[in-house]
Amino acid sequence: MPPRARRAPVLPALGLTLGLTLGLTLGLVVSAVPADATARQDQWSVPVQATITLTGHGYGHGHGMSQYGAEGAARQGLTAQQIVAFYYPGSTAGTTGGQVSVQISADTTDDLEVLARRGLSLRDLSSREKVLLREGPSRWRLVTSNRNVTRLEALSGGVWTKERRLSGEGQFSAKGPITLVTPSGNRAYRGRLRAAVVKPGSPARDTVNVLSLEKYLRGVVPREMPPSWSPEAVRAQAIAARTYAAYERAHPRAGHYQICDTTSCQVYGGVGSEVTAATEALQATRGQVLVDSTGEPAFTQFSSSSGGWSAAGSVPYLASQADPYDGWDGNPNHDWTRTLRDDAIERGWPSIGDLQEIRVAGRDGGGDWGGRVTSLRLVGSQRSLTVSGDTVRAVLGLRSTYFTFAVAPGR
Image (cartoon, rainbow, N blue to C red; front, side, top):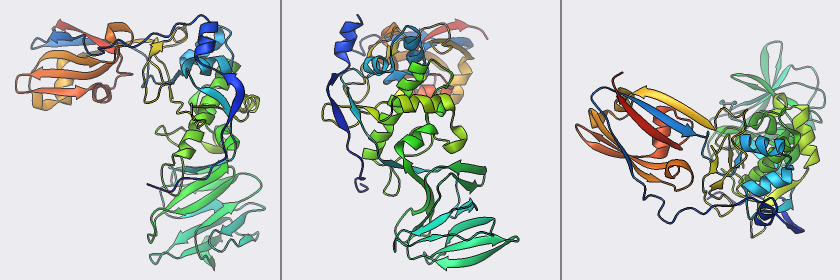
């Protein structure tokens, strides 16, 4: 396990309890998951040639906040605080600040190269020495030799020259954004850009952006929700995203960074992703997070659309419950259909031979048809397989695991 990262404390707000109390105030009913969530069995015989239609709800895993649902709730007059209280029942309000370290996935090389700018500085993180870089070069970079020695180099007139040797890791900083050079193009980031050691003794380096939590979120919220949506929905996204980042910071992904910049964490695009409406939502909710019963940041998962029923997650406040806000007219993911031929399934799992029967072996118990598919049995002429709902979704390219089947002969 990597060392536990230092972080700003998360402080529960005194006297402010959200969730069930608010739900009762709003007249919302939280439905319990049936005791036997897998009791309902669905099965369909599949002729030699068949057309299979999948009818489904939602987009994504369905845990926590539905982003389309947040917009639907905002259109019904709910505030950001009421929205997150509904989607994370039992959590409470808190505050946090501090910094976060983000791995920049676009920089796939071991060197760290930036465009020159006025006021650009370099710090040796071992000696703590900081130097203001001279004007003249067009670019600066940190490179590491096979002997694990890091050097600062400058580009002038198309030629790289060695400037100094570092005793440890190095990072660039400036009063304004720094433009990072990556194989896929230049990208600007606030804060500091660090060439971080991936593994002790190895010359491999990851580019890590170290910056304040609030500045980081400027590059997250517009990538996770359209900033043109209702202000209260965007503010709810700001609270959820801030809390999610605080949770990741408390459970870092690696020893040299805390959070990634992809959909595996939260999408982060740096300065180029910033939008005024999203920044205003962050300012309106500055520092606001949700905490669990221990006062730690909540695991505020969110996805595009719940399809009308949220899925239970790994913690109590990620509840299985009816979602009355997800089905507004502008949500294209609340209901969906996908039609395919039986050989699409046979290509996905060729070992079964000719598909003869589909059986839903398990559902999670919440919503239409008995809920999301947890396991599926594919009966074929050569063998039968039991696969997870998540695997079916990935192989067939479905929007969610919340679906049912209809089978018709012919193609």
